[in-house]
Length: 116
Image (cartoon, rainbow, N blue to C red):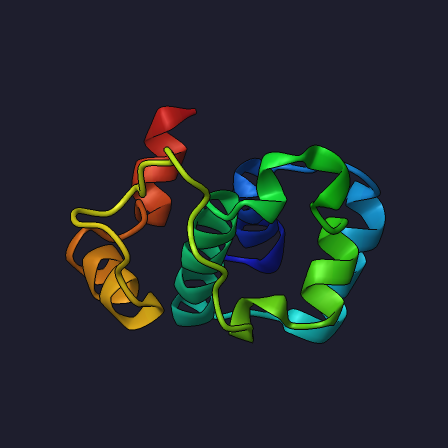
């Protein structure tokens, strides 16, 4: 998977769609993720989406900022009340969520191409 394809997967998952070009530039020049790091970043985005802060769009950082500051490495905030986590069980650590992601991996490049 190339950087453009992986960025599009990230962009689709990220909830605040502002300054896509700047976010893409940071992705391609600073982050440059392999598939393993892409999984970590996507898991962190999903965890952040469940946080109380991210329930209000104006408090979601722009993707460029989130990427530049390597926010996927932050300690996750607790989920907002009444938000169901996307992983089985409640309150899973990032490591447990990553293990779940490995059990159910991202689609392969061929699967993505088949989707058209």
